[in-house]
Length: 212
Image (tube, rainbow, N blue to C red):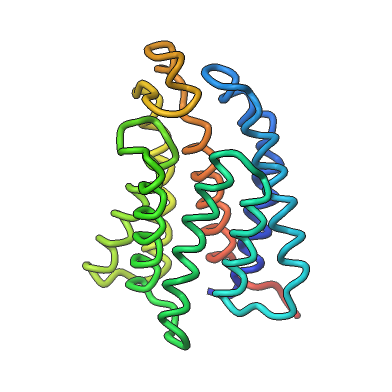
């Protein structure tokens, strides 16, 4: 893979900002209608933190992204910060270990555990309903010794399918839970934003490098 992690994260920031209105519309059906605004603020925060980094060392890049996401505030900022810090901790343990499917799988698994620790369960119509299928797809790919490109393609599909599946769920936690059955029929905005991020990361990672 020819793109740096910083490149991939910056691509995700751009896609989040581009999806601002669409995410707000999703959130307006059973929330405050501001998820797109919050994620755009988070994207700007991540970009600012990355601009302060002198190098592209993966652990530092992920920690900077965590700080940028935390700056968005609210529950979603805490969710992303906690998940990203779990990924950074796994990268720290790996030290100079080369990126592998197994390392990626274990890092995202740590993120899923950390995110679940904030109180949501699978089926509650939250970001976790996209994150857990993503983690499972990566674990399956590691067990099957798949190549990194094939792994990333499966991860992208798993996150998207997990987000889409939330349309059939009833929100049980957070502000959306107030709408009960009326929350059914639309994709959870948090799960949707995660799918956007994963797609951008994967697309960037698999895109060939341009000429120097």
